[in-house]
Image 1 (cartoon, rainbow, N blue to C red):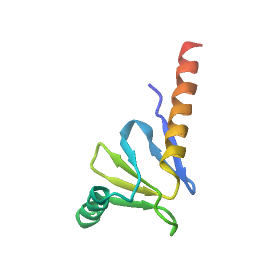
Image 2 (cartoon, rainbow, N blue to C red):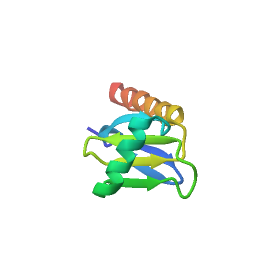
Image 3 (cartoon, helix red, strand yellow):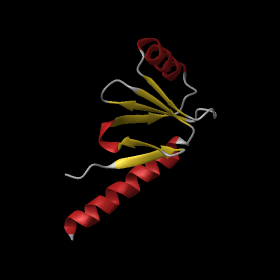
Amino acid sequence: MPLKLINIGFGNIVSASRVVAIVGPDAAPVKRIVQDARERGLLIDATCGRRTRAVLVTDSQHIILSAVQPETIAHRLESREVLVEEEEEA
């Protein structure tokens, strides 16, 4: 099974198979999740100083901040899956 990687902006790439959720940063529960991850040392800030537009939750309980819109990341993930499925069929 090939490793699927997804670009989350500014040259940062994460393993697509480890991402559990991609959410916006504005809701209060998401803000609490980000703060808890910061306190536990499980926060990864991949925004390069820009505004956080997406929060990625991983199966390892790491929280990743991205400056790319959640919809954009989701489209990248979907297009990756389509490319991998086409390669497997060939």
